[in-house]
Image (cartoon, rainbow, N blue to C red; front, side, top):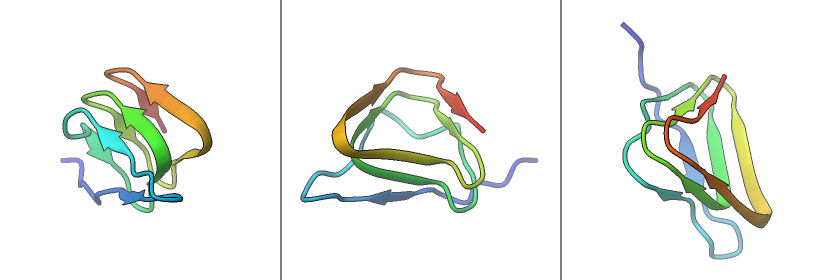
Length: 66
């Protein structure tokens, strides 16, 4: 069984990440920062980082970063 550690979703200059549904998995110490728009069923592996502290980052459904 895969354990869900819940990623950290952090604001950057007032912009917070948007999740279009629960991630399929969020590994230990995973971080999503700023103006990110994440599709449903994303897989955020251990120590993965999505930084949207500059441009907007848009990620579709079933995305995997490991």
